[in-house]
Length: 190
Image (cartoon, rainbow, N blue to C red; front, side, top):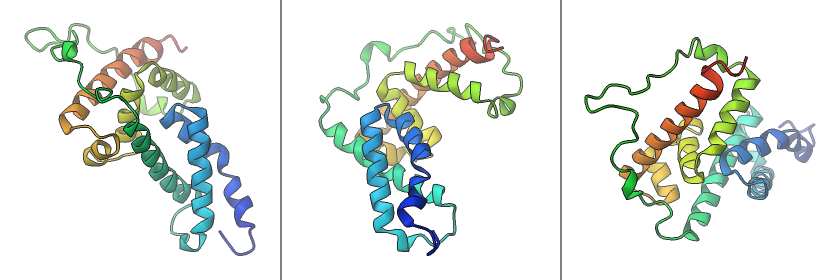
C-alpha cells in the first residue's frame, strides 16, 4: 500500500477474492464473512508491517489463513468429543483394492491434468466434489493441499491425532478421486 492510496479502499478491492477463499475453506458464508472482516481489520491495524515484498493479495491471504485456523479451533471446541474420531466400521478397506493390492476399478486416464488447472469449469467441478465431502474431510484436505499447512499445524488446529489426520486425508482423496473421475476426467465435462 502506498501512502497515496486510501488504505481501506486498497484493501476493499480484494474483498471478493478473500470471500471466495474463505467460503471455500469454511463452507459457511457467515463464517467466511467474519473471517474476511477480521482479516481486513487486522490488515488496517498492521498496514505499517506490509513492506511490499509480496503482493498485497498474498499478504491478505496469509492473514486470512490464520483467521480461518483460529475460527476452526474455536468451532472445534464446541463440537462433540467424537466429531473428529475415527469411524471404526471404516477402518478396514474402502474397496478400491483387492486382496493382492491391485486396483478393483483403475483410475481413468486423466489426459493432461495441468491443462485442466487452467479451466474454470474444472474448478467448478472440483468445488462441487469438495462440497460432497464431509466438512471434516474437506477442511483437513483443504488445509493440507490448498493452504499447504503441515500435519502438525492441522492436527493442532482441529485437535486430532496425526493418525486420524492421515485417515481423514486418505478418505478425502478417495472421495475426490471418485467424484473427479466421474464428473471431470470421465469425459462428462465436454
